Length: 361
Length: 80
Ligand SMILES: [Zn+2]
Image (cartoon, rainbow over all chains, first blue to last red; front, side, top):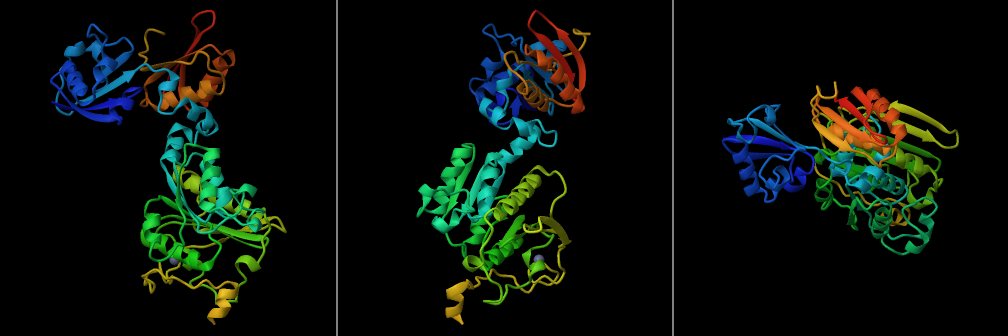
C-alpha cells in the first residue's frame, strides 16, 4: 500500500522533506519501510521495546492510532499518515539564532514564520552596489533574503563614500562586489552573496538574471537601466526601479506584463541632453531614501502583502520634503512590452556620459 | 476539560522569556493544521498573560490557561 506521510518536528531533518511516500500494509510495515529509506527513522518513533514513543502521535487520515489498532492499524492505498512528535521549541525549522534574529518579523501577523521562511528562500539580484544598492542590499540582507546577487564592475572610490554605505574607508580601491559581500556577511551570515564583477551587456544579462526571483535596479546610467528593463521584460522578472538626481528621486515597480521602464521613457535621452553620472551631483542621503523604498517593495513582493508600487511612480523631492505620485501603467505603444513591440532584442547603448559621449560624436 | 481535549503538539518553553515565548508558540502553531491543539508550558510569569493575549489577537482560540505546579503554567490553544 502506498501512502503519503506528513512529518513534523525533528523528522524533516532526517527526511529532508515534510511529505514523503512510504509503503506498508500497516503502521509497523510503514515504519520499517521508512527506516529502509531513511536510516534512523525507526529510532525516532519506537522505544527500545519497539513500542511507539509516548511523545509521538501517529495519525491515519486524522485519527490517532492509539484510538485505532495501534501499530497494527491497517493502511489503504492513498491513506494520509501524519507523524507528530511533541517538540521542544528549538526543534522547529528555525535555529535558535534565527528565531532571535527574525523575532520582530515573526511577531508580525503579516510575516510570521512562514513569511520569514519565504524571505530566506528568496533570491534578489542587485544591479549596482552604489548609492541605491548599498542601503537596499544592507536591509535586504538584514531581513534575511536567502540569496543576494550583486552586479558591479567598479572599484570603491573615495567620492563614493558620502552615500554608498556598503563600503568603508578600508575598502578604497577594492572591488565593490567584494566589499559589499564582506559588509553583508557582517550583518547576516544567513545570506548567500553571489558576486558578479562584470559589466552588464546584452551577452550576459539574461544568464545573470535567470538565477534570481527579483531584480532591484540601482544602476546609475542609462545603458544599464534600459538593458536591465528590457532583460526583465524578456525574462519575466519583476524589476524594482529606483533612480536619483541631485535632490530628487523616483521609484516604481515593474511587474511582468504590467509595464516597464520604456513605458515611461521609450528611448534614452540624446547624449548631452540630460546631465548624468559624475557631473550631476547628488545629496548623499537621497539614495538612502529611494534605495529603502526599493527594498521595502522587494520584501512586500516576496511576502505578497500590501499595495505594490506597481502602476505608480513615486516622486520624492528632498528640498521640499515632499512625496508625490503619478500613474505609470503599461503603455500599449511601448516598444518592448506594448501590443506591437518593435524592440525584440537587447540593445547595448553607448555610455553617453561626459568624455566618452563627446568623443563619440 | 484538560483531559477532554486531544493535544496535537506540546512544547516546553520553560526558561524562555517574552517575546520568545510568543514567537515560539506562534511558530509551533504554524506547524499545525487548522483546528489542531497546541499546549505550551511556560515558567515566565508575564508570558502567562502575554502569550494567550497575543495568540488571541492572531485569531486563535485560547482553550485553557492553568497553573500546573509552583513554577509552571500550561496554555492550551486551538489553531484558527
Ligand atoms: Zn513597457
